[in-house]
Length: 461
Ligand code: UDX
Image (cartoon, rainbow, N blue to C red):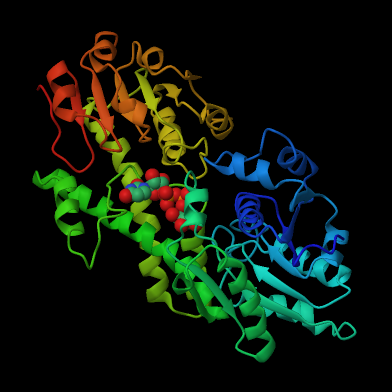
């Protein structure tokens, strides 16, 4: 191990959070040696190649300038544990699919395996940092595993340091975060460990943005942040249903409400529903925790955020059916956008998956179009019975269709030539805008029957 480095940092888990976060630390702290390990050799090979396993604007440049200098990717987990004194744990904690808490609780098997691995291979005291999103009190279990064995004088301090980066803006979110959260035990060694981590982030983040707290508040804050963000979307989506009944316009309501500085304008765009790998998983995790502590009313409150999200997607289908004379059988429907949000190929928990499956149940013929997500869409719809094709070019995808369902807010969709699209569609031609990004009046004037979200429809009959 070269002596020139001030400290040696390890991250176990080279996924969406671990890889970019460590690249950023290596970039900002050239005197720290940062190693990222994973059991998945293919993923590590990709991190070591020109074709990184994750696409994030700005990530390539940072990895290129640090890799081989003070950033290393490897599969040598045991050796890396021995060599490093600060260990981030960033393994996946998906929703459990079996046994108690199936469909709700976090599956902690990879996380516990990692804790035991750290214990087995450590030959000196370490700081272990939870980076994965975990249920509150997980640090206690981590401490039990690591310190319970009383391994000849070795001590482990467990910290929590959740990640708040969003897909597509990860590098920006890490360069200028709203805040960095560091939780620890408030013992002498806990506070010392906390200080070590603060010093890393203080290299590029103003100290007033680095918040320290007790470890349980820290673990819980991550779940609650995501729950609050999702709750805002469900709140505005619930109001969108009311707007459709009352001729109010949800965009106007959002603007008026969001200008109250106590509420704020962000995350108030009505949509076909939220998706992504975090929101649903974290809320269900929060719900499970509340139930565990017999806080059933609190659990119900948060579960309703997920229920409204499902309702919004079901409502989208029912609006389509209703507008299209209560039958979709044999009609060609073009889905524009399959990713859970724009500028990513990620389709995890994308509302498009549910909507495509429901449309196929109605025996519609589907054409799915997306600039980046078609490979994932194919996987997601594997096994769904019915007629389906995947066409990247939106003009070709829409040709001959009875309706367009716009499900992702890709900016290229705003600039499409809708006159041309209209000419090539079956009549009457419908547009259902699940993201409210199109010029609805213009589409109506071209001849479409337009159904925005949370706004009065513009129809010709
Ligand atoms: C989210 C959190 O933002 C991030 O802090 C956390 O670490 C991980 O989860 P991400 O899943 O990448 O990040 O996506 P985000 O940009 O938050 O969007 C989530 C979903 O909400 C998307 O489907 C998006 O389209 C939807 N959304 C967002 C709306 O429907 N309306 C809005 O106003 C905002």
